[in-house]
Amino acid sequence: MSIRKTATRTFRHSWLEDAQAVLTGTLFVAIGVALFKQAGLLTGGTVGIAFLIHYASGLPFGALFFAINLPFYWLAYRRMGLPFTLKTICAVSLMAVLAEVLPRWLQFAQLNIWFAAIAGGLLIGAGMLILFRHRASLGGLNVVVMLLQEKRGWRAGYVQAVLDGVILLSALAFVPAEKVGMSLLGMLAINAALAVNHRPGRYLAV
Image 1 (cartoon, rainbow, N blue to C red):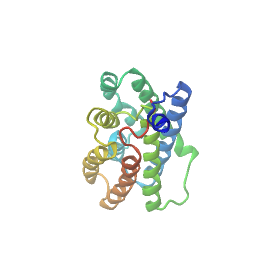
Image 2: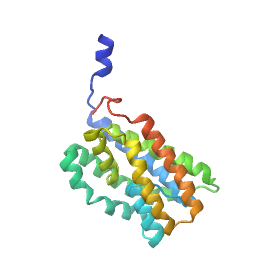
Image 3: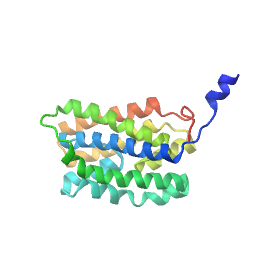
């Protein structure tokens, strides 16, 4: 009985643990995005929307990602609370900066597109999982996904997959079909990581 009680107890993260998670999770996502970007791939969520506009217009990805997320902060505050919103703002801001500086720090002389899709997808999924488990996100559609999981019990990975599919189909207007196909592989890797590891009640910490 005592083992069961211990397993179902909810633990609260410290501010230092949250800060470490925001830094680590966002860095994982940023490295995954760097792999996608060099391979000419894209993904879903507000990251995918920023990729679409970046490929279509040539505008800086980091600035686009930051701007797209601005309208979602009010929803995050109203539905998820101030701590979640503040951590999300920190993660989005850090992601916008890393997206611009990582290409100067991390360059690939040769990058296989299959590796970029799978490894990049798993890194993004792992980073998002870390953020989710510390009640943070990369804003935008991640806020909607987390809200639906908390309020309706819908699995984050499945909801994200549907939304990402819509974005991916829209990319056919700007991205070659073969790159869109490889992007689908990367998005499957992201959502597989989330669907398997992020279920309601599995990780009992806030």
